[in-house]
Length: 462
Ligand SMILES: Cc1cc2nc3c(=O)[nH]c(=O)nc-3n(C[C@H](O)[C@H](O)[C@H](O)COP(=O)(O)OP(=O)(O)OC[C@H]3O[C@@H](n4cnc5c(N)ncnc54)[C@H](O)[C@@H]3O)c2cc1C
Image 1 (cartoon, helix red, strand yellow):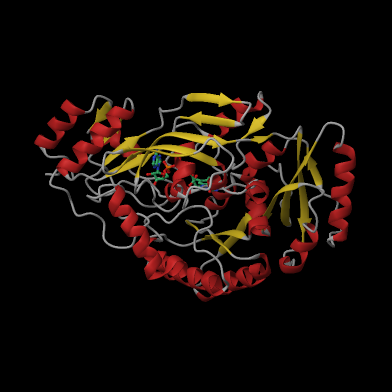
Image 2 (cartoon, helix red, strand yellow; image 1 turned 180 degrees about the vertical axis):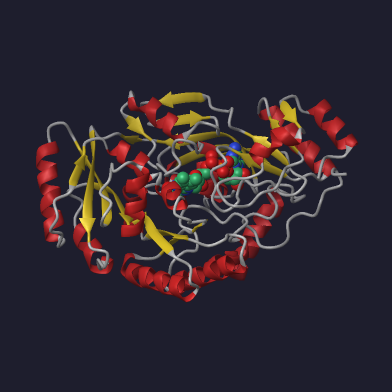
């Protein structure tokens, strides 16, 4: 659905960033890491904040939906263009505006890639803790818009914990600067928090200010073979009984996932058993004693196997980030993301295996165990009625267990109809009222996050 001639001419006259309406060039924006696909009407790489404001003004006038895009690695269709929309490509906004060592803050453009930021901050002895599996491609703007997490979120929390400030061009065209450089503030409800996880439905982030943590001198990866029928409800509390040793990540791969990843990574991981992947924070002088203490803790928690030590945990996380791709090679097409309290993990695993058998859909299980967060990967056609039934049953199971329907991937298009299960009708109406204030014409990424139909084709499309 292309733009009308008048809308296209107005876009070219009013917005100065690079634009394209060439269908061939647009194909790279048509999908994300979900199975959804929709060619946009156009894509724009805005030049600066004023350009973004002019673009929003244009979109309001012509009633054309806009969708922001960073690395395009979303798994629930968050960055798939709504019909007739214009993609706003922030991937080139990768400037590091300021590193403030004294206050441990960094200000960045939204297009900075997570791992690039990590590498830059290393020489400052600082780091931004959330390290999603997609850290080699996903951007700080996308991480903020989806409240992304990673293995280290077990110790450090999700992106929300670390966002200190945002510059946002709202869907109304207004500019909002929200947040504080201070470590705390008691000035009413958390306005900043409304924007974290908003999936581009309220406004565009043109700058993000992040708090940083001091980087430990050593990050050691430990890989432990565990039985497939491990009881997590009792094991996890024993493993994590005290703050020392300082485990900063606790990940799980079931046997089938570990085997797939081992094959994918040419044997760089054990592949004939389920695995726990741990990260231990330490220092140059304490490494030996911390490793001993960690080994003792594993014995106390009931594990008999010796862990395999990876001296550089980052390598382990890059490897672990390939789990999704590895299981895709074995037919997984639907990547789910749910979390429950630790005490309900065993019921979640048993219930997921039961629904997999009931629907005759094989499943691979892996995820951020320390956060009670599992990523069941189902071998099923994502467009089929069966895949919708599997998602519905998994969502219902998770809610019955007191969990959340999305721990870190977001809601996107695929889970929008379940939003009221999470927040209740009253909660959703409060969110909708806030959205109407920020985005009065409903041009910001319609069809995502909020239930209800996508914005109908705008008058800007012919
Ligand atoms: C292999 C793989 C592993 C993954 N592992 C994890 C994981 O461990 N943890 C996790 O949390 N997620 C994970 N994900 C999901 C995904 O990578 C994250 O959701 C990530 O935060 C998306 O970032 P992105 O830059 O790719 O955003 P995009 O997909 O480009 O966009 C995501 C959302 O952000 C919005 N957006 C983008 N830029 C802006 C902006 N400037 N202003 C406002 N809104 C904007 C978009 O409109 C969209 O709604 C994984 C995905 C893959 C493919």
